[in-house]
Image (tube, rainbow, N blue to C red):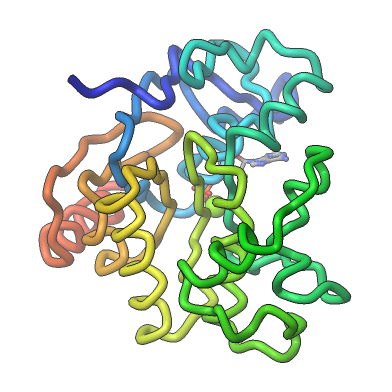
Length: 245
Ligand code: ADP
Ligand code: MG
């Protein structure tokens, strides 16, 4: 039986008020099963980043609930939410967001330090080895390629063994070959370690690495595709974007 790692129930997120109000997410209900890889696609402004931020506890819905396992994130205080995020959520950004003054190993160890845990050396070395960077532990971000930096960011996001790894356009700043390496790595984390991954992407080829693609328009779910291929995803995106014009 598969369980849901994360579930959104009737999540609405509005920005501003009155005439200027923007509904980024509109009564959205979704779930992500444990050990599955989901891609989220949709036109620019359709609410993809807001969905990820609300699901990851980085932003709070205006209405609705977000359940991580049995925990309702929307009911937690700011402090409890911060602690939960550190322990149970991983997040990877398009722009890597590594700390430039720290080495790769220090960047990877950071979430453990923030959680008050003393990182074991082998734990950090293992995490770097899993992303193919065993030999780069002492390098600083400026001494690494974009693809290597993103792999450090992935190792950092996974060091706490989070319930869910969220990635917002993780290959958006990478060339296509390097991007494919990162996607292959994400895929193998799902297949080999049953990691749950939710990834926003613009790229149909990137989405084809997922088990399922969700399409958003105007903050609502506008269909989904199981076992996606780059071609079926591209065809669906073209239809969505044509309909939006
Ligand atoms: P996407 O990632 O799909 O491009 P976003 O989730 O970033 O979309 O944004 C969804 C909608 O919410 C857009 O119309 C955007 O302009 C709006 N929005 C997002 N963040 C804010 C904010 N902080 N203030 C006002 N509007 C916002
Ligand atoms: Mg976005």
